[in-house]
Image (cartoon, rainbow, N blue to C red; front, side, top):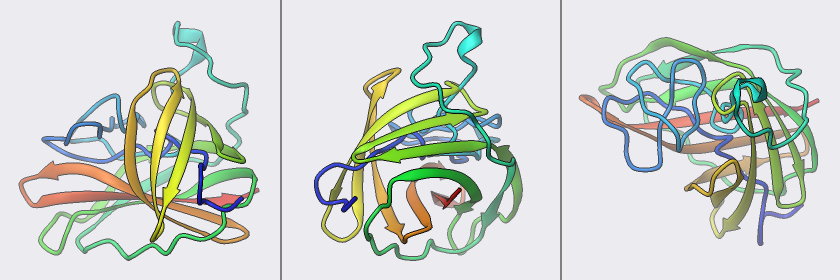
Length: 194
């Protein structure tokens, strides 16, 4: 699908570390949603970390199986690379890389684990993750220059903005990950088509 109108989004894209998260961005060490939590120890799964177990009383937004392998997040003391947009291809993807860019003077090293599977169909992205909530449904709208707005349709109605790049086999998203003493953080999640 061409990300010109709407494209499946996510709180999928939502994890980052921060001691003072910006509004609409948050993450928990067990893979929280961008819009649902904040934690200095957080660092997993925007696109894939938008979910908790449906069995714990949470709403089940989809029945997608989480077939992804757990990924260890990495903080990198650098500015994030520029993303270039592209055509997002429908299909099922697994989170294969989670990087939190902390700026040139920021901390570096491993942080948190995430396990996320997403399914893209037109402008809808279904997400299942090891975070809370465990499932999520997002609608994405892209704009010029490879940027997007993602709006939850389940389990809530939160929204956030970011950047993306897409090829026939990968989908990469970046979104704000809050701030800490070193400055602004940017979360980058890479999904690979199964």
